[in-house]
Image 1 (cartoon, rainbow, N blue to C red):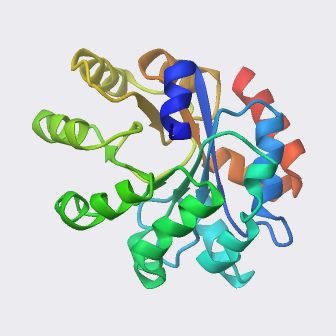
Image 2 (image 1 turned 180 degrees about the vertical axis):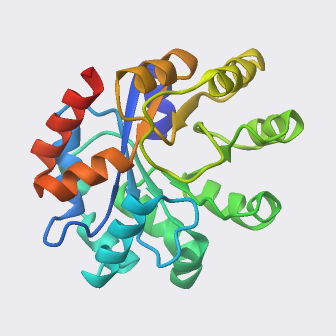
Amino acid sequence: MNRINKLFQEKGSNLLSIYFTAGHPAGMSPSDVIVSLEKHGVDMIEVGIPFSDPMADGPVIQDAATKALKNGMSLKKLFADLADIRSKADLPLVMMGYLNPIIQYGFENFCQSCNEVGVDGVIIPDLPFADYLRDFKPVADRHDVRIIMLITPETSEERIRFIDANTDGFIYMVSSAAITGAQKEFNEAKQEYFRRINAMDLRNPRMIGFGISNRQTLSSAQENASGAIIGSRFVQLLDETGNPDQAIEKLFENLEA
């Protein structure tokens, strides 16, 4: 069974997924970050593929991506680093990146490499859904790679149900249509969005991301979905500390505040 499906089947609630950008900070191996996060009890990890024009990302992740590219990170280098990750870590791994570098690598090759190293899914924010259904899903399915789709407060009910019917793994529920970045709280409009999606009784589990950085936002996400995805705040702490153990420990302190 795919590790993503297994996680939601066996645990399914109060999950925590952490995002980081591969290749940043300099000299830090992505596999070392993964091992550290699993050791600290993280349930799932998103490994960011650095790209020169990350349109959905805020300044923290944009800066990390720029520095990672300068550090020489590429998909080829990332897969090489993860070649023996399954001898070190068991939790689900999801790659998150934009279409351009994945297409340059070759989507069939990308899915094959994911399968070989043990990457369980991929999030491609700029992948059109029609292209996903026609060209990408059959290839990903062949290699047991889940393509995770995003929804926002502006996504129509019809489209959400269409996504739910044609994807597997989980649905990435973006807290707002804005770019990534920490928020102090989720306002009533976002809470209403969470309640509206809850009432749809979707087939797939959901994870809420964008803006989670403290107890209020984490609790709200975990109460209204299977769990929370945290990116910008961890990337910032990783940049500040240069140490994944210290970064995740500081993040947990933030989440208690």
